[in-house]
Every structure is written in structure tokens, then in C-alpha cells.
Image (cartoon, rainbow, N blue to C red; front, side):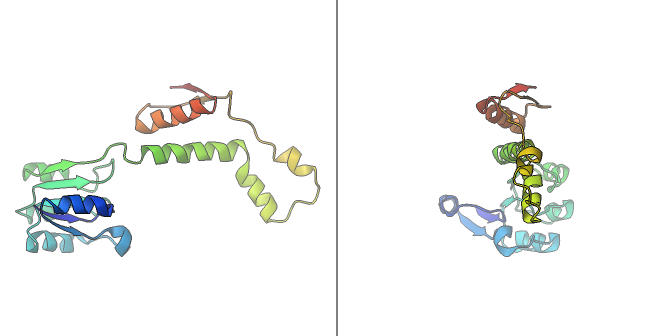
Length: 178
């Protein structure tokens, strides 16, 4: 196996993969840039790569057609829109993705936004950072938020993100309707 990994990977996983063959790991999060389609095609050909793992890099039809040894593309994200799936399928290349990879993080972000709005955190931040805290009682009147416990949350779709969000909201005493 000759693998090119352009996604962030823990060193322990790279070491495990190296027991199977040669692994080149160049994460876009370290280089702060994506590999151009031409550079990717060139590297796949010259290095005779048969396993490619991407997260943000694009793998177009031309790249796939120019890479005769490529047999597997792993996409480290839920969406497959960065890889030409039809071209890969036509070339006999297996493509896999990671559905629900960031579901927990997205659900936590959504819950954080719920807290921010319910507790008026953005307004309170603006109020204090602009030095408008003159009347000692005003923040208690205008910045009073609401508690989320006991409130009802409507979740449209119980995919991975919706399920995580529903579980977290149940945990703080919210009623969840999906």
C-alpha cells in the first residue's frame, strides 16, 4: 500500500497505517493550503499512490483519470462533494466518507447558540464592552434571559446532529419535539 493522507491524522494512526505500507502525511491544517488539482494528480502518478485520504482537498474527474494506481479515496467529512464520485466509480475506485463525523461538535455549537440567545450573552457582552453599565439595576432588567429547562425545542430531522442535540437538550430538562 502507498497512501497519501492530506487530512489531519493522529500520529498513532499514521504509525498503524505504516505497518501496511508507505504513508505520506501532509495535512492541509499544517501547510495552511490545499493541494491544487494539478499537483495532486502529479503526486498521485509519481508516487504511485493507491490510497488517498482527503478532508478539504478536491479530487476532480481529471485527477482520477490521470491516476491509474489509485484504488481507494477516503473523505474525512460527511459530504462527498469534494470528490467526483461518478468518475471514481467509473474508474473502479472505492470512495468512503465519514457520516456524522462532526455531529457532536455541531450539536454542541447549536446548544451553545441556544444558551447565548436564551441568556442574552451577545447583548450583555456588547453592553459591558461599550461601557454602558451606568445604572446598577438596568442589566438586571434588560439582560435577564430565560432558562432553557422546561422549554420545548423543535428539531427538524433526527439525523446524527439532531439526535445529539436532542439528547443534550433532554439532559438540561428541555422537552424535545422532533
